[in-house]
Image 1 (tube, rainbow, N blue to C red):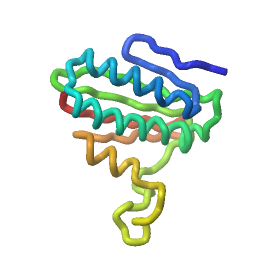
Image 2 (image 1 turned 30 degrees about the vertical axis):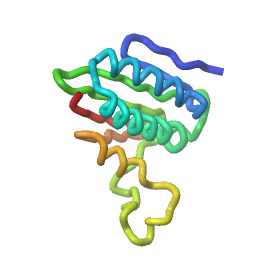
Image 3 (image 1 turned 60 degrees about the vertical axis):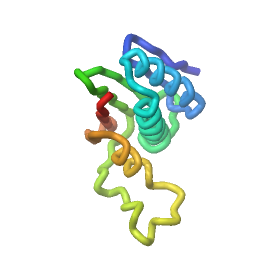
Image 4 (image 1 turned 135 degrees about the horizontal axis):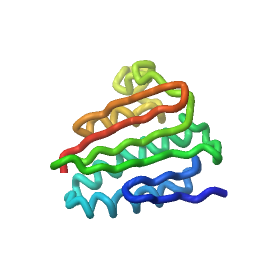
Length: 139
């Protein structure tokens, strides 16, 4: 089985949820190196965990040969993180509104909503070769 790989501020993981803890460890260590405080690290960790999980399950359909790439970059007083999968892309406007009465009791469908509430910006770039979501947060 493939294993996570780290090169600088970039990590790649196979499409298996067992590697979510490795992503969290990498993310938190890198953010502490950037000087982020713990509350900001917590918000970013929740967001990245949600997006990587979505990339594994929805983007790559948990196919172990497909990878998820996480890139971190410090931009002045902010961190920019991209999460990319190798799926077929998706249109975020097609995601049901989790606040709609018909969706309040659903167990899924809140991830992007939560990420948007925790991050300063969320940009979804979808192609038929995968989806890249770029999130930014002041640190």
